[in-house]
Length: 310
Image: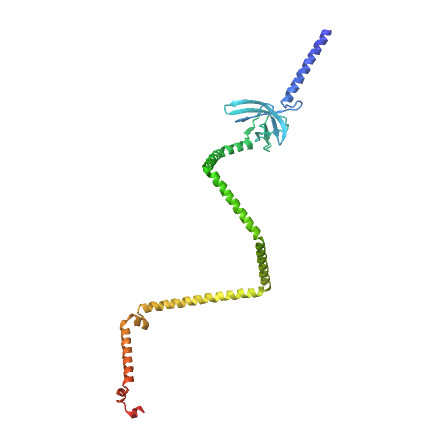
């Protein structure tokens, strides 16, 4: 009888141990014990950092974990998800592998599609590997790396040239230049200190002048407006005069063209030399006649009768 009781105790212990093992195993796999679970599978091209037990999240809430990770081909990995979300996952949802922290940890995030139809148990959900900002930063670094290398090489060449210049006596020249600049700076500072009073007086005088100008413009605003109006009127009149002078200039130009071409009396007088010669001969004859009248007035009066004169 005692043997039977011992066997029953051993059997009960084994059963209880098995139950505890099953419950622990399901708890380790995030499989609900007293409620149904949903199992979905997805395929990724890579699953860096994802392993059995990796957490699965929906809207920031953990709803399950990765149950199994296995190769489905040379460029694809099959991942099985155990979910405790009893409301179901809609058709069209996606599973993203993304960074969970800064040290390389990963997690699976399900993006809810919002459709009414739900995925069945054992159904397929599309998988997307999210490279994250660190991958983008790495890609950017790879893109700018050649430029940085070229810039570094150029900077090294420039530093080498500067070093060669300094080795060839450039240090002394540089020291001399710095000393000259320092001396010039001290001289300028001393000059400013010596002339600070004059500068201050000049600034004060300029300030008084500006104040006087402001006062003058404020008290004589109407006169300034009148002067500006007169200047505007004068400018308009000058414009009219300029137009009239332009017309006169055009007429003079036409007259000069006519004179140069020999048209009119002046033109003929200038262009025809015979008129000038005749006028010159006439002037000579008139001069001779006048001289002869002065020398011999009786020669011209002897033919005149006295009665005709008086």
